[in-house]
Length: 160
Image 1 (cartoon, rainbow, N blue to C red):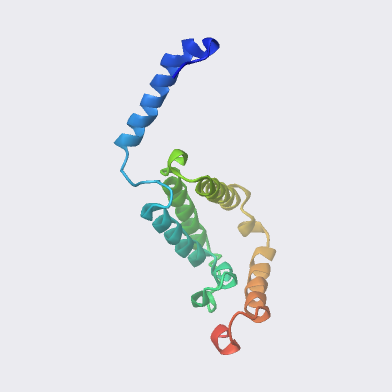
Image 2 (tube, rainbow, N blue to C red; image 1 turned 90 degrees about the vertical axis):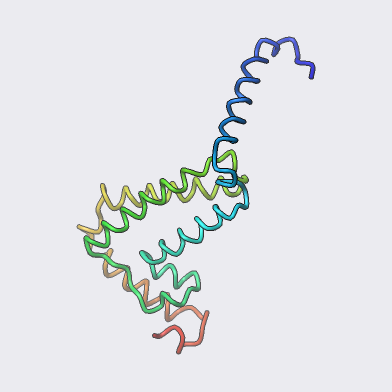
C-alpha cells in the first residue's frame, strides 16, 4: 500500500494501533460480543426476562401474558433489588465491546445502558418513589388500563 506523503509519518502509529486492536480481539473470549453471537442473544433474552419481572405491566404491554396478574413491587426492598439488577446489567452490557457488535447492536447496547443509568438516577438520587404518591396510584392505574384496554388476548386469558 502506498501512503500519501502527508500520512507517511503516521504509518507506525496506525500499524501499532491495528496490532493493539488485533491483540485485544485475539485475547478476548472468541465469540463474546460478536454480532449475532449466541452470547449477545442470551444476554438480551435474560435482560428482558429480568426487566419484566420488575416491570410486569410493561411485560403485559409487550404481549407476555405470564405478567398479566402481577403488579410492580414499590417497596424499599423492591427498589433495592432493582438497583442491584440495573448495576448488574450495566456491567454485563459493558463487557460487550462495541467493536465486535453490529451497528444496530451497538445502538441497542448504548440505549440499554443509558436507560439503566437513568433508572439508577431515578431510584437512588431523585427518589420519586419516596415522595410522589402518583408513582403508586399511577402505576396501578396504568397496569389495569393495559390489561382491559388492549385486544391482544381473549378476556379469560388476560383477566386472571
